[in-house]
Length: 320
Image 1 (cartoon, rainbow, N blue to C red):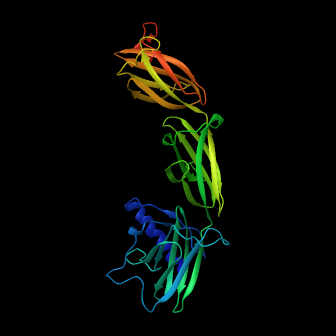
Image 2: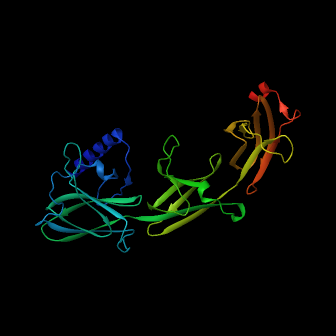
Image 3: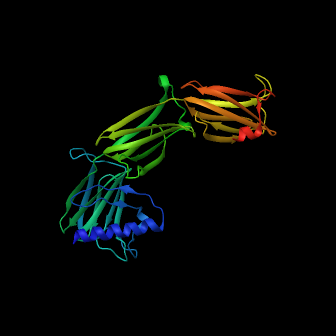
């Protein structure tokens, strides 16, 4: 009976995914409940009328959550959601919710599904409420992850230019990985279920990208720092060495293989690049100029492209 309810729950969730984007928290297997992805509170059927969710005469149920099976109760940051297991119009009715740590609910005797989310970690459990007070606990099997990145030699990277994305550790058959959290700021703590995650660190917005697999352990804060081999480069078109940058210049950046990787317009072309060899092409007033240069990890530099007849190239050749 309960397995059929869970299957119906999963079918309903699939329909929700087709209707609108919602935020999700992963649920673990607890007491035989299959893996579920629970959307936000507003996506569930809410109770009708003004009746309080805390019912007098019902059984008092105290819910607590721990990071590990031997851990202490989590005192804050949990979102509790209680659902009836029988669907109404294709949705599981949510009968109660709470924020904080340990929560006490007065519920009518019967069977319920309880979900506890703690950041991006979460667990679901089936409970039975009787007339007598009782206590239930959920083990989240979760920990924290704190990410940072540096340049060669331990040089700090400006936080505004650094972002992380957290993916599932296991790739799909096509090689893709499910994105869990995008745009994570450095040194922020992310709560996750224990396991291996694929981390993508991006410095700047071009090609300075580092990938790594990191294990999150239950009940622990995992701190990981990756090292970027890149530098900040500023390019300008000048009429003489040390001269003023020429405005209204179009820039095209090519990698060592000749593939275009960045285009921009302006007197300056500033970007973060991974170490390696590049060619920069500058176009101004139908004249095209180019220059080869090398990026050395950790060595920020300014590249000057001279706007001279000797440096100019044929426009058709430059287009190739």
